[in-house]
Amino acid sequence: MEIINDTAFQIEALPFYGPDDTPVLTVIVKGTFEIRPGEPAVVASEQLPVLFGDEVYDDKDGGSVKFESDVAPYKPRADIVLVGKVHAPGGKPVQVLDVSLRVGPVQKTIRVIGERHWVCSNRVMPEHFTKPQPFETMDIVYEHAFGGIDPEGSGFCGENLIGRGYFVKKSKNTLDGARLPNLEDPQKLIKSWKDHPRVVGFGFYGRAWMPRTAFLGTYDESWRKERSPNLPKDFKFEYYNGAHPDLQLEGYLKGNEEVELMNLSPAGKVQFRLPGIELSCTITKADHLAPTGTSAETNEYHKGADEIEPAIEEMALNLDTLCLIPEEKRLYLVWRGICPIRDLTALEVRTVEIR
Image (cartoon, rainbow, N blue to C red; front, side, top):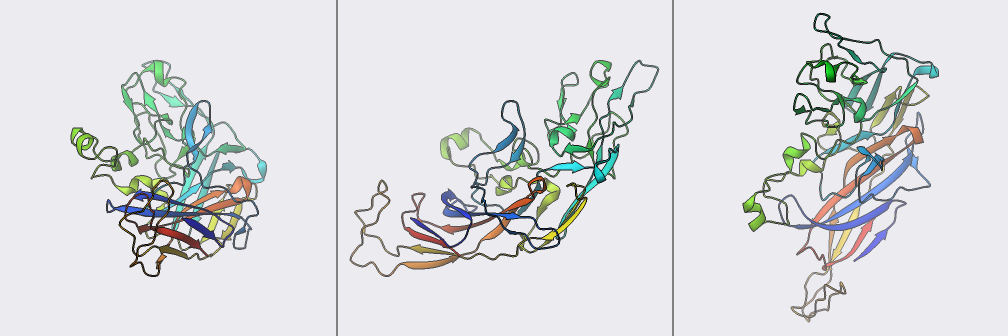
């Protein structure tokens, strides 16, 4: 299989089982662009590679995912993700600040609050939390959002295992001095240790968190005997959507949406458009194959006497991922398309051409 790339972007073509449980060839196109305030984004001179594994913030201790792998067979909707920091206006420290992200019709606002901790001194005095500490910048990561584990209460937040502020049992040992979340929903601020608000954030959502884990399907004895190592029958491809559930867009992105960022860079408010680039993909397949002489090892076909001209198919590419990186003044887009193939060897595919 030959990939003919008439773009500046990175391309991979990989075989998978698709949504209908049949073999497909997934074409992944990743383009990196520079953010130009007030203008459409432009193609960057340095193109980020297609990522085959997740990249975390802390290689040593793990934690939240900074960039999720681009390798997925299919996404049923678009992911909108932002990797970055909060910036106080003018660089002057603040205790509380709202930040917002808008891409076309999708908008999300988060209230960012300085460091606070719970005070729980005795049974007579009700618990309360300290005043927020001033901050100039803060990473927007799920470690700063609501969530976490309460060992004493034998509970955990299924939507964010690495967050802070989750309790199921009031205990001076665990509550006193515990940190509150820095990232909150402005409409549902925490007032009590009992509050369990929805997790907020702009980054990639954990693969082991709800609701993503609910899409994995059933791995039981029946699956082991009949399906393993393939995915279970009740697996849902929504699992591959890695954005926060509030930042997933039905119907994919058009690619020319207006973007507005507020307090997510030193500039304060930044507006620009996505580049508006349209891509086309043409797949050329061998139409008929000889019954013998096919070599999976050499990835070659030998013509049969009745072989005719190769079949040419146009593949639709969906723009299913936008990742904004305002700290670096750039973003990347991922287009993805699938076409049926006979089996996972994809030997009948001769060329993949992207224009």
